[in-house]
Image (cartoon, rainbow, N blue to C red; front, side, top):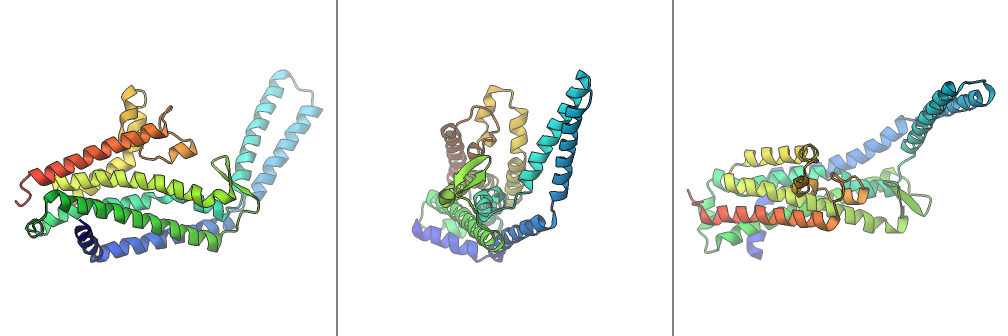
Length: 311
């Protein structure tokens, strides 16, 4: 099995496209980090914040000094409340980013890894058919399931490598462009996280994101294996990936919505608090993902081992 994986890994990296994808991934993430710093420098909302503070003070004076009836007083208080909310939002958004924030939120750009892994997973089997190399591959005295398993594990290795490249590029960009947190904690989605927990927190979030990448890649792998079409596998997988959230929102009123795969693929929602459906738990989401993963792999292996794949 190890030799089969090594062979698949070498075939994958013999393609210029693979090198291009990984190099572009690192360059884009590093560039995004620098662009975020540049944007932070160019757009300064301090004047807008000062204007909001002035308006709030003026309303305070009107409420104290003016003879207002109850209706006017309520309207001014509502306006003041709205201005206060806007002020808090602007103050929060105008806070300078720190490297701890950037590193911890790296999981937010894992969509790039997902897209690249979909491309690899979709073509790793189907290209053997389109290029006519499948007959030579199956002529070896090796069980078909081992051949397919080596291809699937190669996809997971690529996803893991791309995740590492993403994390390292983001960390390098964070250390180059952003200052360190001055306090002992930093804010992550309204939660105070100790600076000392930076690496464990960020790596855990990246691991959860890698699970998302893996299940979407398994879906693409299944489609590419069953239909032997790279373009179909890429198209369907990307369509479902981008519309999965909408599908879940449309089905939210039905009880079976919690069994839809795309309600669970983004496990980081459990850490950020933005769950697609109320009442979901991490163990349940992991269980649903495992169930779908087993189903996708079972269909892939059944198709590859039972059908006349030499045709």
